[in-house]
Length: 505
Ligand SMILES: CC(=O)N[C@H](C=O)[C@@H](O)[C@H](O)[C@H](O)COP(=O)(O)O
Image 1: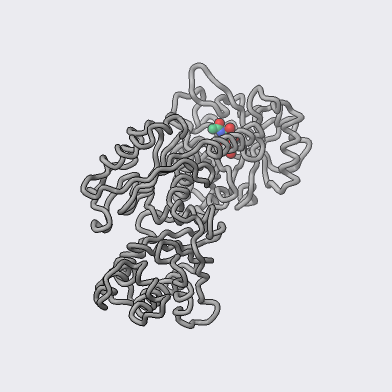
Image 2 (image 1 turned 90 degrees about the horizontal axis):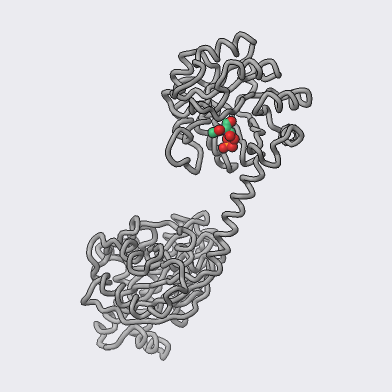
């Protein structure tokens, strides 16, 4: 039957926005013929008049509907028997009607009798699985997800894939319809079991499509010109800066008072940037530790002792009076490098090697959140399994090793000594670099990123990355990580979190 010929095919709904400039037969016929040229397998046409205009111009099957706004019923699609009859007579092959469980002028059974009596197929536009069950029990030939999201409450953004998937248990003739806007929506609908897919607005409602683009363009324009207040809270210092489109403007820095907590740090920053009030529209905060749903928890209390589950985003929003966003600092820096630095828009892993080790992962153009990239606390099989890897690599470890070798000083002094040819210092740096080399190799073998971007005081110390590259195991050229130096410097976290905030908010 006709429905079988529509298996895995595209149906284009050509419905002008009522009273809009396209609300005339000529425009509807134009859209219908353009859809046919483009390869549509069927059309969905609204109103008897437009169906009569389209019918003689194409051999494609047509799903016909009549839309009405009734005073005494919320039923909008083909509410009356006369509508169904008129559509059949105007040449519809399938007549679709509102099958929602609401006060209605004509029963579902009566509509089906009228449609089947004229040799046409009946399609139930459903809002739920219960609608679909009732319509099938009454004898419809196919069911659509058309009205999901339109029977009360806020209309969701995307298609109702769950309903589409669940409907398959009832019949093979499930038509995915409603808010299918992107190529991926259409293919997903088919993968999740739809028999055919209807696209309307995204193809034929130029007013809507224009609006979608305009909205995004205006949003981006706002983001590009309005600075974000970016705050980077680290174990030793707090940096606040105004970031506009990846560039740092005014900035201030204060030492992190480790004896107090986040409420105090936020209050301190608010006081220090008071004069910037009114210049920014949102705040982004990069922090050491874990951010889940705007809530901040420590991962390593020795880096910074913060309470469990601190409501960071809520506190920032109430303190600064603008929408707020927060992310882990190394993940933020990864995003900063990806968008404006050495990542160059390629899939990458970022490592910051300084007092400890942090990291972030960008895969398929998306920054992974949660725990992803917290390499510092990894217990690597290639190193001492009982210790986090940062305890065999970082600035703290380098200084501690130096002391064990009888040389007091910080990591920088060890680098100076190594450059001066001191064997003890050279051995410590070589050890740290070879552990990082193994980490980079493990990263390459798990994620195969296009580049590994390394930053941080140790990572960017003169000659360090060359040592890392030299210490990579020889697994052949295909397995070799591309290790490059970070470019956003100390602003990487701020730049990244500002951009994440601008996008998320
Ligand atoms: C809810 C309702 O009245 N839906 C109508 C049903 O015919 C049309 O307005 C939609 O355009 C059609 O379903 C296609 O959906 P979308 O335009 O989202 O691709």
